[in-house]
Image (cartoon, rainbow, N blue to C red):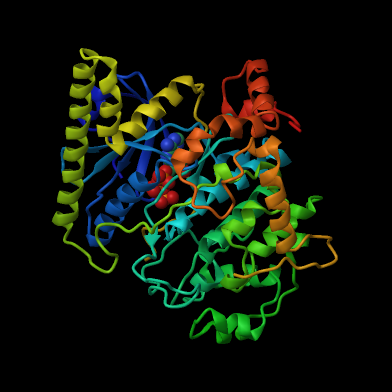
Length: 504
Ligand SMILES: Nc1ncnc2c1ncn2[C@@H]1O[C@H](COP(=O)(O)OP(=O)(O)OP(=O)(O)O)[C@@H](O)[C@H]1O
C-alpha cells in the first residue's frame, strides 16, 4: 500500500500525520489549505482493483452520503480522484481518537463515558436499522471519538441494504450471506457458523462485543481462527437450546457445536468482572446465540444502562428503506463503478459551484432570496457547511488514532422481555411505560410530547430540538469534560479524558 500522496492533493492539503491504516486505506490528518479546516484524508488504495473492491468503494461512498446527516455518523466532505485512476481520496470530518486506542489506555474510560458511548452507538445503529441497512463491521476502531466523548461511526465499506426484500419477518427471507468478511472478533455465531441468512442481530452482537471490550479493557473474544472464535464464544455465553441452534439456519452448526471439545466454562460474568449489573445485563442480552433473542436497538435505547441519556428527540429514525441505486446482486464492471463515482464527483463539484455562484448572487440581492438559496443547496454542500461551523468550534488536538491491528477483511474472503434472573430488572413493558413517563416529563421533553420513541423522527426535528436536548445532557457529561480540558495543560485527547475523572 503506497503512502505516496498525489501532487494535486498535496497542493490542496497540508498533511500532518498518519492517523490510521486499515485493510483498504491509509488515513491522514490534514488541513485544507483553502478553508483552514482540519480534516481526515483517506486514500483508498487500488479502490477499483476488482469488481468486489469497486463495489465496496461505491457502497461506502453511497452509504456515507446517505447517512452522514446523523450526528453520530462520520461526515464525508469530498471525494477526489487520484491521478492513476486506481486510488481514490475521501475527505472526512476529523475526529481525535478511535475507541480501540482509547480502550488501550485503560484508565481513560469511566463508567459514564462507556454508557454515553453505547448510547450514541445505539442512536447511530437505530438510524441505520430503521433504513433497513446493516453496518456489518462494527468494531472499536470504526468508532471515532472526540474530546467531548462524541461518537461518530465510520467505515461503511461492508454496509448492506436489506430493503430488496419487502416485508421480511426478522430472521427469514434474508439475502444469502456472501463474501461476509467482517473482523473475526466481532462476528456473530451465525456468521461464524455460515448461516445462510442474516439479520440486524449481526450488528447487535458486535455492539455486545464492543461493550464487553470497554468493560474488560481488551477484546472479549480474541479468536485466533474461526473455530477458536466459536469455542471462545460458546464457553462464555448462555448455552443455546437446540431450537436456538436450528434457528440460525446453518447446515453444520449443530454438528460443529456437538464436536466442540468441552472446556471449562467461563461465563460472561466471570470473564468480565463488573460491579455494574446493568452493563452485565445489557451485554448478556446482546451476546445471545439466537439472533432473534438479542435485544433490538430500540430496546437497547431504553435499557437501564443508557436510560439516563435516553431522549427520543436524539434517536431519529428513517421513514423509508435506504437502498443504493444499484441492487446488491447486480455487479457492474470495474469501469462502470469508477465512472459512477466520477460522475458523483462531477455532480458534487457542479453543486458546489452553483452554491458559490448563488451565494455571490444572493449577497448582491435583497435578503428575501436567501431562503431559496438554502433550498437549492444540495444535501452535500449543506452537510459540509454545517459541519464546517462545527469544526471551527471544535478543539483541535493531537490525534490519538493509530493503525488498527485487528485481522481484517481483505485477505479472507423480537419480541423479548427482559429475563428476571433475580437481578431485579424491569421487563420491557415496564421499561416502555417508564420511557413514556419520562418522555412526558417536561424537564426532559420541554413540552414536545408529540415526539414518541416509536415515531419516525427526522433529523430536521432533531436539529430543531437541539437546545432542549442539550439541556438534558450537558450537565451530566459535557460540562465536566470541557472543564477537564480547560484544566489540563496537555493537548491530547486521551490525557484530557484521563483527567476528566468522575463526571457524575
Ligand atoms: N475521520 C477520521 N478522523 C480520525 N481518524 C480516522 C478517521 N477515519 C478513520 N480514521 C482512523 O483510520 C483508521 C482506519 O480507517 P478506516 O476504518 O476508514 O479504514 P479501512 O481501511 O476501511 O479499515 P478496515 O481495515 O477496518 O476496513 C480508523 O480506525 C481510525 O483510527
